[in-house]
Amino acid sequence: MSTIEDKSRGMVSERLADELREDILKGRRPSGARLGEVALAERFAVSRGPVRAALNLLSETGIVTIVPNSGARVRVMGRADARALYQVRAALEAEAAGLAAARAGSETAAQFGKLLDQHAGEIAAHPEGAYLQGVGDRDFHMVVARMAGNPIILRYLSRELYPQLSLLRLKHRNVTGRGARALNEHMRIATAIADGDSEVAGLLMRRHIRNSWTALEAQLSETAEDPE
Amino acid sequence: MSTIEDKSRGMVSERLADELREDILKGRRPSGARLGEVALAERFAVSRGPVRAALNLLSETGIVTIVPNSGARVRVMGRADARALYQVRAALEAEAAGLAAARAGSETAAQFGKLLDQHAGEIAAHPEGAYLQGVGDRDFHMVVARMAGNPIILRYLSRELYPQLSLLRLKHRNVTGRGARALNEHMRIATAIADGDSEVAGLLMRRHIRNSWTALEAQLSETAEDPE
DNA sequence: GAGGCATTAATTGTCAACAATTGAGGACAA
DNA sequence: TTGTCCTCAATTGTTGACAATTAATGCCTC
View 1 (cartoon, helix red, strand yellow):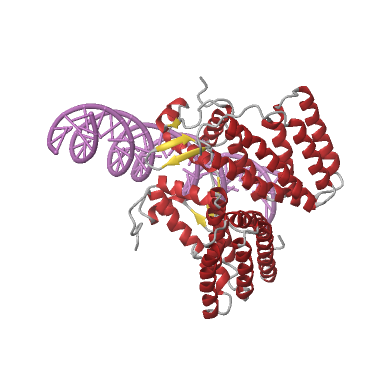
View 2 (view 1 turned 120 degrees about the vertical axis):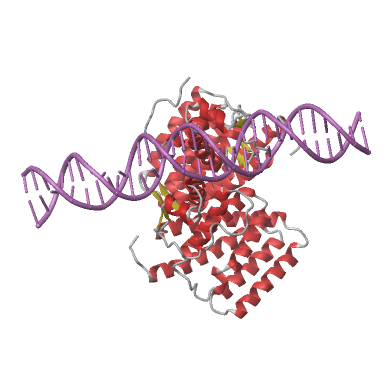
């Protein structure tokens, strides 16, 4: 079917990276799968140059690991990786929440209200756990990250940590009905940000992510494959 | 002279990246300088393939900016970039200090003592400000980052934030005798870490970096080139 | 039969030529 | 003189062939 498909704007290597990222994050090409350059080049009807560039791009985001002279594979996320990920996430998102609070304006509360109402509707429609894994939860966190006004934080979160999170969640689909609790925590964070209370916003965000980690860790324990 | 020089192990692209990074961080190839692929390829007697790979590597670290179809340049760090950098640094290093404290053992205090004694000696030898810019200050922060045991934090700090810091400091050489004060702050942080006091360690580290930013910001104001 | 070593097929790293895009410079018209 | 358009040189993006490294296969020795 699709050789490289639709949008012909931009560099081939970036379109390739987009395709591959979607493949990986959608569950095709499972963790550990080889990503041979020749195979990919044939699959997308393109030479090996752009393929290499695309693989390098994806290795930056952390969803692909490249070992020199051996090749690229879809990253396998272990328990230690997940823990490290959530630690960094807690630090960066707490900072982001604090910065966002410091920059909050008079219209901030209304914006958050609209967004969270929408999320509440989605949760009501899908009562059991569709919230956390979809784009819903990330939306809130992305909004906060953008509000922080720090391009480095935004880049780390959107380009590296969140893709890795998606990869991590591929195997632990049902994030047991934490949706309602998460939404509640989001609302409290939003209030603190809108109030301009940096300290509380950062604290609540940190706690929120810690709770998220606790829930995920329990799941990791259930489906325990390997001790480490 | 040197074509690619000495160590012939490893990939050409990585050796190239090392050479270029050193060139940039040593002050040759000033901010904004073009990094044409053909020129670099001839300069290092190598083809354009590895040059492209090396430039991509350096753009990941943030000391080179690449605009598609236009080329690569040494990054120009503005005031906003510096502020964002120090914000992220504060968040990540505070987290690292806290994690390090949580993992501290009985030998930690002795290790820090040895390191900081050495730093004190260096400061005594070079009373005016050689401390902060050299490898000395970074050494302490690197030790803390390693102690944290979080590979993501370590990678961000060593591979991205610190190179950018070096680039930023290229134009503001003399970090007015903050050496002694910085060392004092380091000692207090080390004590907190060795005591296993995560909260205080994180707090002190955050304050330490905030102080560092204040000092740098003053210098940026003095040599104010552009309003932004 | 098991372990170690040379050989070989497969894959990645590098090269040099080709295609496409960009930005500058100049000519021309208003 | 100024603004616009066109042309062209320079640079990046892509391609396919060549070299080097790796990992597995089979053979030989113990």
